[in-house]
Structure formats: structure tokens, C-alpha cells
Image 1: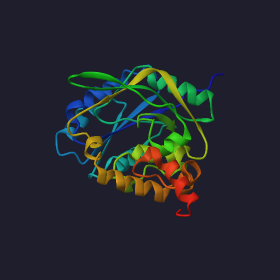
Image 2 (image 1 turned 135 degrees about the vertical axis):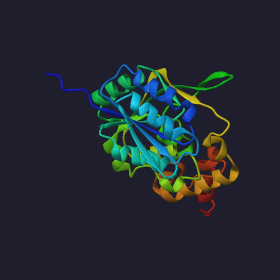
Image 3 (image 1 turned 90 degrees about the vertical axis):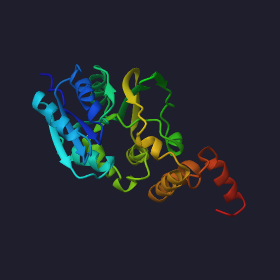
Image 4 (image 1 turned 180 degrees about the horizontal axis):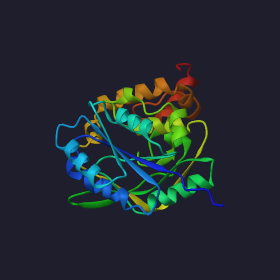
Length: 262
């Protein structure tokens, strides 16, 4: 007898994304995969996001709503995942979209290949002016030390989120929390699989956090945090710490060691 399909929990932090939230939720509910639950975490929005989330909850029984004071996206994701009943998690921002086949194909991989920890797909970035393909490098642990090639909206097992230590809420003002989370989950073991189709659509907005955290100051804060938290990983992959000019890190570290400066 075939075992039942695992419940997938889609966790959607929402901070002032009310105008897009219903479109995001509907894209999830249009998925061909079941069973699903959708957890919307309103992260202290100052717009009408909470009212819209309540309207959506009244319309669709699969929706669970968490209302919290503003704590940042990592805090909202962690709280949503804590409340999730599903064994498989898909984090999704409150203004993004997914294709109808994405969840089902990702679950199939996770079910068939226990050695795979993370499944994602091809992505597209879009805004009102159009869209462009998101060119992602293939997964490689050495490359993960230098940069992130897995967007946040990938599927993984809840038990692996817990084992990795969850999302680091200390990175609230640094950005790229998903990069550090993938390092925690994958730095020592686990495979990653990228599905060969476009299943994720990342909305570009003028107020997106990614733009706000793209400054040199935030980059330095981020690098210092990564080096402090994952020294063993960087010593192994880059022969020393991650540098501001990231692509030169291993070369520079090797030179410093050669002359006795590291």
C-alpha cells in the first residue's frame, strides 16, 4: 500500500506586502500538490496586510494566520515553521509566486532521495516592466562559501531546519539570511537538486530588503558574521576568512599564510 503524501507547509512572512499577498497565496493554492497548509505570518505590517490576510483566511480554509510584532524575516520564518504541521517546508515571501508543479516535483525528489536536503528550481525576476531569467550557479560547497546560489524559496525537511539551528535572527539588519541558513544546513553534508524548469518568480520592488542591504557597510557586517559563525567552513573552503573582495579570498589567504601573516 502506498504511503500517504507528506504535508507541505508553505510559510509566508508578510511585511507591508498586502497588495501582493492574495496573488501569492493563490499561486500556492493553484499547486497540483496536496496536502498543503499555508501559514501567513504578518510581521507587524503598517499597511493593510493584516486585514487582507484575514480576508484571505476567511476565503480559503488552508490558511493559518499568525500576527506578531515586527521581528524581521528570519524571526517570522522561524515562528511560522515552529507552528507548521508539515514535514516539508517551503518559505515564500509575501509578494512572490510559484508554478503549479514546483511543490509536487520537489517533494518527489525529497521522498525518493533521502541524501538530498534542498530542492529548488530555475527562477525568474520580474516587475511591472517585465521579467528576466535568474541565472543561478550550480550548487557547490566551495562556491557556497563565496556566494549564495540557492534562493530562499527552496523546499527542505523541517527536521533539517531544526538540526541546522533555524534561521539566524541576529542577521535581521544585515540581509542574506537565506545564504547563512544554507551554509548551516549544507556545509558538512547533504546534496542539493535543482529542478530543470522555471517554478519560482521573484518580484522586484523599490522597497525590497535586498536593495537596502546591498551597501558596503552591510556587506562588511555580513562577512564578519559569516566568518565568526562558520570559521571551520571558511578555513576548509577558502584557507581562511571570507574577504570583502570575495572571489580573491582563497588566493589572498593562501598568500598571507605563505608569508606567515595568517
